[in-house]
Length: 130
Image 1 (spheres, rainbow, N blue to C red):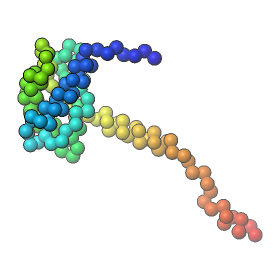
Image 2 (image 1 turned 90 degrees about the horizontal axis):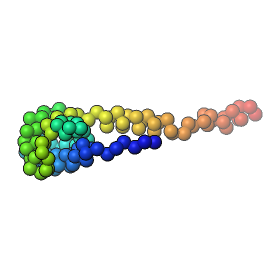
Image 3 (image 1 turned 135 degrees about the vertical axis):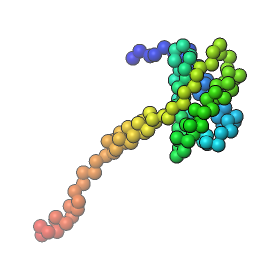
Image 4 (image 1 turned 180 degrees about the vertical axis):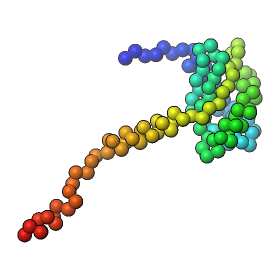
């Protein structure tokens, strides 16, 4: 098995994930953005665009709208926290991969359950034969 080389974009994406999470939790005061979890950040190789995948529970559409409106503020705050020549543009998206993964794990769990092979009630057959 050949492992994928660890690129600079991957390291920067991890740092952006941590920083954006902190900025949202501490500095962002948009009432639309409640409890938001940053699931993953993907970054283009040229570090120009960061896709930020979020989960926000029941108010997901509202939180996504608030984050998209606050993208400039978050990017500016990110610029003060990270030493990058150019801070990437931020695009906020809903994380659907987690739903797919959860569904797949549920299906695998159902498959791995032991099948009950007992007959309904073997003792009643013996009594009726006597």
